[in-house]
Image (cartoon, one colour):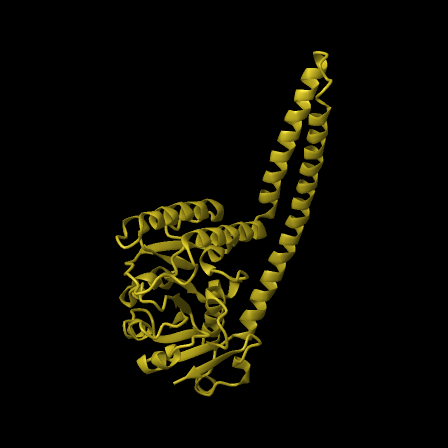
Length: 338
């Protein structure tokens, strides 16, 4: 049983050493623990400090591509390294390495495919009142849309099985946390959570320039991810609203017409007709989108099988010690091994 702990990083030289030092190298039920740092185009000494602190591998992006891309790279490399279980944690030392055994335990016991660390955001003292509210409300929305029971959807401290990693496809450029939960719910994966501790970080979040920007981008990600996997529900809801408004307008015109007062209400009838036509068109778009989603599911299954064939057996010790050309991706990633 091989566990790979991946740490997406961007300019984290001040904290990455401590993060790596606290990762346990012996875990009950795990034969080997590998530490993988994904350097997302850092301009400081993150990579060097990580290797000096004991990281086994460092995957490099030649430029900063964002958290979602770094997470995706980490999964790809971890799978190629033969990971049976993958843990994702942050490089800013928000999460405690000592809690990794608790995080992976449901997967090792076969009770879960994906485990998310629950920070209990409502009681975290160093979170602002606004952040606590947004975390709680946002997580509630994600639970309703994904069909999961995760209380802390934005948490980046999570563990996933190899099969889950092979099935996840992160397409957003922003953050992986919401999209992966929507996907997990759509694929009916077993998702659970465990309580974890969230420590104060020495710097503000780099994920967004402000709380408003974070909310806006999270909403866009949420809507896009849900529409991608449940398009018929999204378009059907919009269609029903438009059709209802159109029918209300037609009923209003007919009521006035039956009372001999149709004059002056033709404009509302025209508007109602437009709403009805638009509602029908949106409904048809929903049907087409649902057919496309069906094709997407077939493509994802084919991609899953291709990934599984491509990574069967992981990397041998020889190829891991001497990174070869097949570890250099089109996305300009490279891997260093010590």
